[in-house]
Length: 265
Image (cartoon, rainbow, N blue to C red; front, side):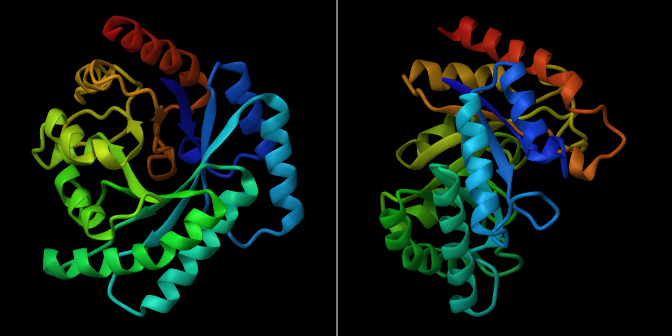
C-alpha cells in the first residue's frame, strides 16, 4: 500500500511547502483540499494547475485527489451540481490526479430520495470522468456515513468511473464494523482515509495510534484481502486549531502506518 496525507492538516500552506513535507517524510502522495481557502481549487487558472502538477512530479510525489466539496445528494438544481462535478474533474485531470472527491450531503431527505438524487448526478458526470481518466469518489460522510449507504448509491450508478472513499471514522461512529464497511465498498473502493480520534463522541484529531479508531483492524482487513491501494492520513486541523501542527506529526504518522502494514503482512 502507498501512503498519502491530506492538506486539511496544513490549511492554506503554499504548494512548495506541501511538496517538501511529503518528500521529506516519505509520503508517496498528497490529497489536495480543493477549496477557495486553499492555493489550488477549481477557480485557479491553467498556469497554477501546470505549476502545481510540475512541482509534485519533479519531487516524485503523486497528487492523489482533488478533494472537492460538492454535495451530490443535496436538494436543488441538478445542472448546477453537475457543472461543479465537471469543474472538479477537470481540475483533477489538469493536476494529474487519478481521483476527485465529493460528499453526499443528503441532509434530512428520505434515504431513497437522497440516493436517487446522488446517483442521477454522479451518473451524469461519469462519462466526463471516463473521458478525462479521473475516477469520481463518493466519501463515506454525513447522510451516507456507512459503507452500506455509499454502496447503495454506487450500485444505482453502475459506472467504473464512479467509486468510493472509505473514511474509516464515519462508518465506525455510525456502528458499522470495519469488515462490513470493506465488504460492501470493495467493488467500488478508490482509497482509504485513516485518522484517529478520542472516541465516537469526541472527534478531535489525535496522532495516529493515540485514539480509539480500529486502524490496525482496518489495515489487516485490507492486507488480508490483498488490497494494494492508498492509505491517506486525514488530520483535520482546519476545524481544530488547538491541536498540534501537522508537520511535527508526519514522521510518527508515517512510521505508525508502516508498522501496521508490516504487522499485517
